[in-house]
Length: 270
Image 1 (cartoon, one colour):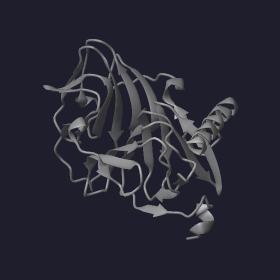
Image 2 (cartoon, one colour):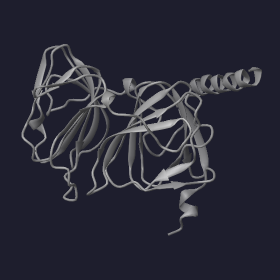
Image 3 (cartoon, one colour):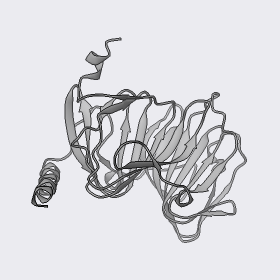
Image 4 (cartoon, one colour):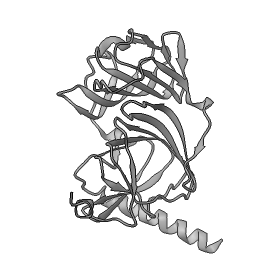
């Protein structure tokens, strides 16, 4: 018991020490706390407060966290030709006649009819607009309550998932990841761009940049947007409390395991 306590005291000391210095500088957005971002205007959803997590102004692909005020009403028709995803963090959002509570998820594919949206008591949501992809084969809306889904084992100790969407055409997927308290990660990379938003819990995580591990911690509202083939994880990436993430990839992301934090460019000279 004393040894276990010492380990956790060391973790806490590491986290607190890191807080004083600020997050490491990275060549891509990670270790972001969304509350610290400036508000942006959303033409497709008037009357809301929005924080843009990532995006491409040329294609209008965008990832956002949005605060819907009480008695807000809108429509999903503000992004024609694009697919839309919504995940409810807090409050309730009605999509047509279906009320989504926290954990509710909706995927509205390109070409689907506009849905009325409303938040009688207000809501906090994740809002994603995706590029048009002719390889996508999911053409019907998906509206589900993730609480009704079962957590599935990943084969990694303390890590389980719930699949929200998995397109067999282009490999795009959205899923939840639950990391148990104290569970460590492995060094790995995905062949696709991956983004994640921490809904609940606290987790410290390492990004491997040019063969050097950069460690920081995420609180609820933490976010990362990680380029394809970027190595992350490792034994120091621990869940300080049970953590639940919303994860997304817009292409098929085959995973590669790594024995340590290495320079991926040197390791893959091709």
